[in-house]
Image (cartoon, rainbow, N blue to C red; front, top):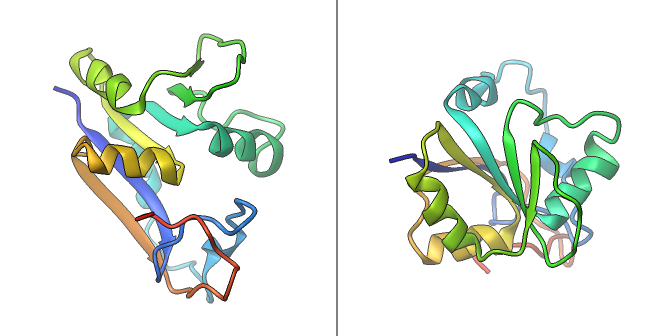
Length: 152
């Protein structure tokens, strides 16, 4: 059966985005040139990504507006909207837990839970995440600067 992994970064006090959904704080407070490229190793065993609509929107409008950075994967975007799916990006309003249960039974490599907090929390509550890769960025939230906690 396929493994489901959460590969995510969060602040020292448990937040994964600021109040506007931004992630610029992920750089932390220092030079990270000595860090190991764990992402490249991680994605070798992944062929499917699950993310929420807000994460998808942030990717296509802010982080990588000119190129879809996950073109080597099949990406499922949980949304209540009616976006048109493509061969590589599938929009669905299916319950995240039900979708993961279905995907785990299919052939393939691992499944990456890419974000957001609501989806992560639902899958944690249903005990559907097999492996947790959580990078803690040495940043503590300022009053009202972060509102999307990992454990809401």
